[in-house]
Image (tube, rainbow, N blue to C red):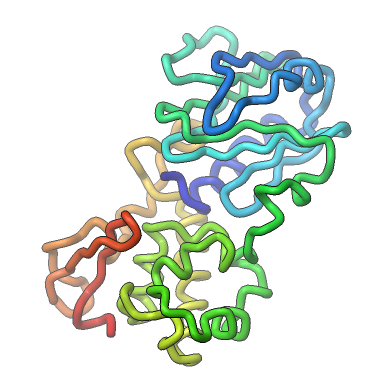
Amino acid sequence: MPELPEVETTRRGISPHIIGKTVQAVVLRHKQLRWPIPARLKSVLPGQAILDVSRRGKYLFLHTAVGSVIIHLGMSGSLRLANKKETVGKHDHVDIVFSSDCILRLRDPRRFGAVLWTGRSPHTHKLITALGPEPLDDVFNVDYLFQRSRKRQLAIKPFIMDSKTVVGVGNIYASEALFRAGIRPGTAAGRVSRERYQRLVLAIKAVLASAIEAGGTTLRDFVSSEGKPGYFQQKLQVYGRAGKPCDACGTTIKKIQQAQRTSYYCPRCQR
């Protein structure tokens, strides 16, 4: 699944090519992804210029003077820039066509993504209002996370993956951050000390910032907007490395199942 660094990489990749450009047409090849795609996109978006492209968690917003397109890449989606001569693929479900012979094309093989429209601020949309703080913002700090964790029996990994706690910390980067902080993924959130939460907050910020800088993690279903893969995967220390030696201590990396997700950890480095 594209995680926050992949979505931010996509935002940075498409922004210079579509901001200021006027939409010529919208092509909807399917009526529904995770939710129905509003048919009115085909009438309200043409003629509008893209004023900005922003992100909240794993949601992308394409802002215009009359409203915003809300896009989520789901499990396997990607946005890429195409031209009008390129062949349309089987899983290319939505095209936003610009007058400059540029197309913003959504590909989503599993169709778990979303393309929605709002005439108000996207931050007031029901999918957005309940989201927790951005992990790279100052408000996401040890005071916030420690207080929110008190009396919680939920394991620390699903706790930090809950978008109401903090947005955008997906499976890969949660595993990596917990390794850096030296915390086992199955530890109850309420039993983690303030000192360890301080390390965890810094680890989450560091691992996400590094991934964004590197262009996102290379996943089978993800390529950046220009068709280039991310390069953070080569730096992963525990995720996907079950049975291999820990780079820090040589202990064999283990994996467990948590909330239908696979978690990876080093039994010696993480307590």
